[in-house]
Image 1 (cartoon, rainbow, N blue to C red):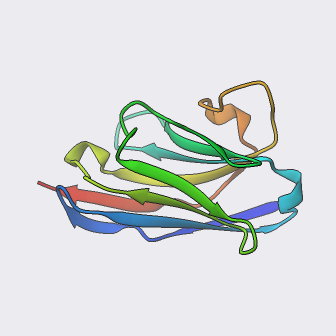
Image 2: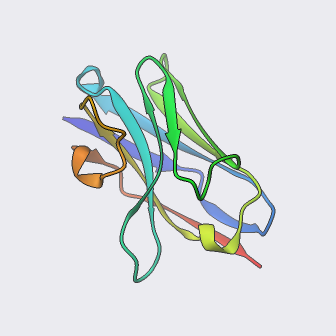
Image 3: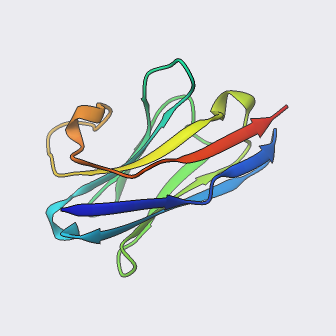
Length: 124
């Protein structure tokens, strides 16, 4: 099992920045891909970004150029730096972990482990 705990959410004004963290514990060696998803009220969970060992990244078009996913292997932590935030970025953000190959990683079904989520609210 892998446990994921997110932190860093909060309230920020349009144009501001936040950094989310996801601390992983347990059998982390069993996962090769870490991702971030988000879910706004009344909407489906959507892909935001993912990072794959040894460090390749992929982003949703809606956040490309504004968000950066990174990781600290020694600390078993993945980050999501969010800049130039917009009202439409408001959502609960979830960290996810999986072990798969040959796919980009946009589908939530590819990930086996999930955190509890952290709320990000961007006020206009």
